[in-house]
Amino acid sequence: MKKISRRRGSQQVLVVIFISVLVAGLPALSNGVELGTRQQTIMPRMVPPATPPVAPSNVAAYLTSPYGQWDWGPGTNEGRQLTLMPAEYVAAPRAARLLSFFAMADVHMTDKESPAQTPFLGWRANFGEAGIGQLNPSAYTPVILATPQRLDAAVRTINALHRRAAFDFGIVLGDMCNSGQYNELRWFVDVMDGKLITPSSGAHVGADSIGYQMPFQAAGLDRAIPWYAVLGNHDQFWMGIGYPSAKIQNAMVGDTVMNISPNGPLIPPGAEGTGMYVGVVDGSTPEGAVVKWGETNRFATPPTVAADPDRRMLSTSLDSPTNFVNAFFASTSQPVGHGFNAGVTGNLAACYSFVPRADVPLKVIVLDNTCKQNLPGQNAMFYGGGWVDAARLNWLTNELQAGQNAEQLMILACHIPIMPQTTAADTNQTSTFYDRTAESNLVATLHNYPNLLLVMAGHRHVNVVTPFPSPDAAHPERGFWQVETASLRDFPQQLCAWEILRNRDNSISIVTTAVDPALETNSPAWDSRTYGIAAERIFGRVALTDTSSHTYNVELVKQLTPAMQEKIAGVGLPPGHSMHISLTESGVAIDFLGTLQSADAPVGSNIWDDVPTASNSSHTVLTSDSRKFYRAVEP
Image 1 (cartoon, one colour):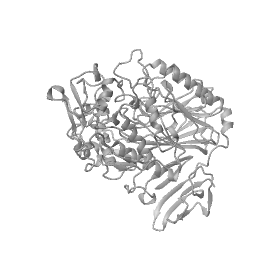
Image 2 (cartoon, rainbow, N blue to C red):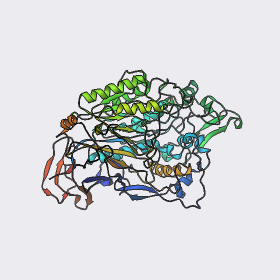
Image 3 (cartoon, rainbow, N blue to C red):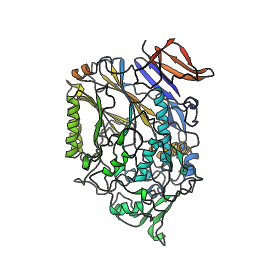
Image 4 (cartoon, rainbow, N blue to C red):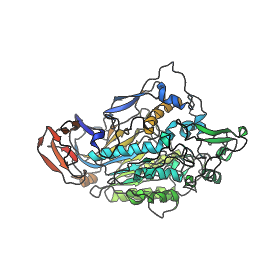
């Protein structure tokens, strides 16, 4: 791995590049693959105007046509944003790092062979046809063929980053599953735990010959990184939107392909209707053809598959995700339960808080803001919106007040964003909750707690930052940021690396860097990147002229109260200084500014030694050197 950190004025830009020979235990990846998008990004190529349309079912053309082609392009950096700060504010240099962590969102681990998914929606669609609520590509694109492999690539990338700049924790912002099935969650947890993965279900056809069906050994997240989970709508509802009715639950574990309304699940009678078999992916085909779908009158007998009890629905009632939560206690990575509390039932089963570092006064509040009841005016076919009922709002305000009283900084993590701006470029805010008034009231509640730094969310599969300035200009500390993390399923298929920094004036900087997973060339995960880019265009979700990376890297500055400024003064680790690592014939060369230090353990051990005679110069680390961690600090 090669780490570059360059200063631009008072800013420090951190980029990490993976070089396979430097990290033991990982497979050889494509040398030069850029992980940090501040330096280099994936840029879809322009689609020539005369390019023939490609049907969503023509999977081979995703890889060969112009729709999925891409190149490496320049990095992105939106700079330092002072939207929440007083008009006269002058940015201060960084003083210390309080936290470093990663976030993933919307992995959508998919049982593509389940008889109760709905791949026919995407497979039968026409070119440019995303459908109602963009349900066609949500139900099917070829990215569903390799969801376990893509998560494994992300985990390997996180481990590589952690070896050079340690993460204090990681958090997954919901939608680990696609349809709330036990085996989907099991794949997710087992990849994180580093188990042997069988990425198929039922008869496991193609497991001995088809790349995306072959069992593989997952790397597993570095055991030094605790990871936490947030509940998403796809984790508890069928396809993320459907009530887990008896018909759906029986279809999941049965051997007959489910039969629903030909109009799909969003138009009544939806899943409770009949007339269309939903189809399954044929794992014996290299391109994952969808078979056993179509109008019921075309079939002499209902199509069948090999039944699999592991396809069972975890959340079997609307009001409580207890079964889903309990599944996280069957894991070998840390912490036990991954944040969830055992034995909690009802609406609060997926709500909790934790303190990542005992020496930093900051807690993370995890809120389940998914639907838990039938609501006035709600479409009975759609349970994918946001909602915070009275019990959860009371729990949240108690957590916020407790953090305020304890003089703790706070981060709120949830799946569904709260009144986000429409896109990174369109600052008009949109509603993601069933009740816009309740959503606005929630924002007003959050403004009452000046120690709240930010809201983290997933759900929309985008990199979007929304500022929430204080409603009182005399108290800018009541403002907060919201940052949405893109999906690992859909382009740009990224995770996010975060730093919470204390500035010299004891304001806070929140630094986000989108990360492209390093992929092994010609692997199922590698193909999935091209599939993801092509799908956005083939289904018409982006313009054919759109060649942007859809990446957003930024430094967000937040004002604190005088009491909180005093509390955090002197807290944190040195933020590091300019540093560049490269491979030479003599060993690993480190070019840096400042003073070079080394350690046998990651950042956080506080056992760092100066490297003798190394200052503002190059230093070569012999490949046999027992020291594995290096940092450059202010002289």
